Length: 440
Image (tube, rainbow, N blue to C red; front, top):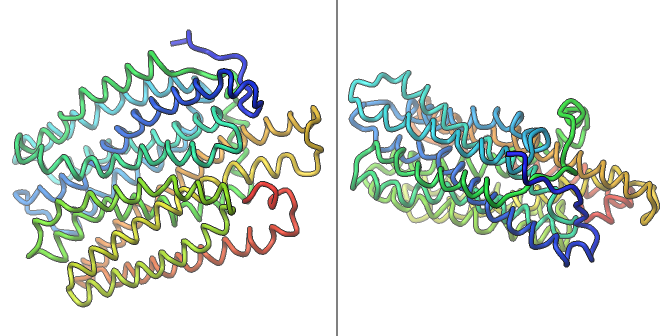
């Protein structure tokens, strides 16, 4: 897999971009989205399978553990996956990471085929689904290199949305597949698509020599304050998206048991959150990521309060509509925060260096490498939010019988994120021209 290496890549050169760069970038984006989409489907398939495990008589808290573990493992895997494209090439790593999805897909079928499968085996096999969660970090780190600065918000938004919508695919199709062919089909169904994604990446994607980097050098990004600030904000946006999306079916099933059949509508939440994500990047490109992010965190806190009211009043209509609004706001926040990351690191790298000079070009290259490393690390840390949200719901329901305590803590966290966004970017951006120019 060492044939498709591109040695010259200058996406910020308008002539190069229009002549050949745009076509190559779009091709790589297309197949990256396909592979990442399948990563998300495998990662989150247990959100539906857990609802169908009634014959095993697991408690609600135990089921939330099954849904939580893929989020935990996937989040941890995003750290090494971040450095995969730079070490081995974006195309090469996409092929391998896609093929690894065969492991959790096959093991799921094994687990549910035996009525005597113990709980700990379910936990272990569900954890392997985390392999799908790692794909996001490698895909986003790779696509960052393909697009010019002015188009990265939209490109990263589309790439992420194509992956995120995999949660909706699972929650839409799996109830139908399971109903027709049984629980084992929830794993076997995806195998032909996984093989197709690996083949597509092998034949149609490219490796960039410009993206080559030393992983040890990339890890230095962990020493930057901006990395940790954005990681915290990303826990609030993407972590919330994956957490609320995977918790939705179980939450409906446990809090509205008389309307459990409406679990089939759960796919609408991640669908809306995924489709609206590019809008967050688009808005950030035009009015600034920090402004969009600040307003969005306020909207998220308000949506959480409405969800709580739906539960208190036992109004499924209010709960469902509010939950949809909540997931939609996570999608907007995903797009806006991801747009902020490359803008911040490029602005920091080029601060005080005149544009158009060789020094500026060298600094811009450093900024891109820093941004790519930061994107993966931030996405890894942010994804842990999916684990915390599911465990928050599980623990709250086990302790109090309801989700109110978890929702109150989530709302408080969003208020904190809003304050951090204002203090670190909006309050200071006027005093740091490079950040202002980058529309952070």
